[in-house]
Length: 64
Image 1 (cartoon, rainbow, N blue to C red):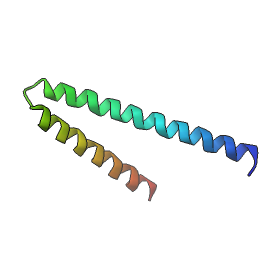
Image 2 (cartoon, rainbow, N blue to C red):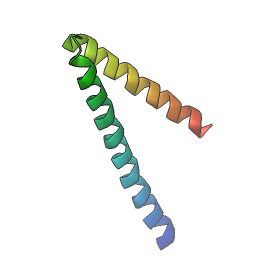
Image 3 (cartoon, rainbow, N blue to C red):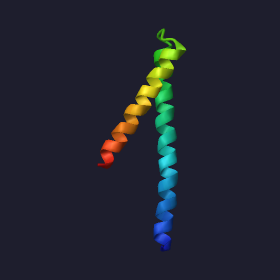
Image 4 (cartoon, rainbow, N blue to C red):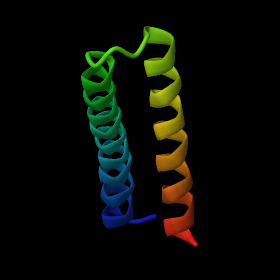
């Protein structure tokens, strides 16, 4: 394995983590807004989980 491959691998790992945190933060922010409209915390959590599942599915579909 040469230096270029190692650098690319490390950069990909960091970018993947950063993107994941950004997506999670965006979902949390959106669900907090909907929580202010009268949804219970339980409903808000369920909506966040559903949104995360949808994003994961979209990522998998993008890989194919």
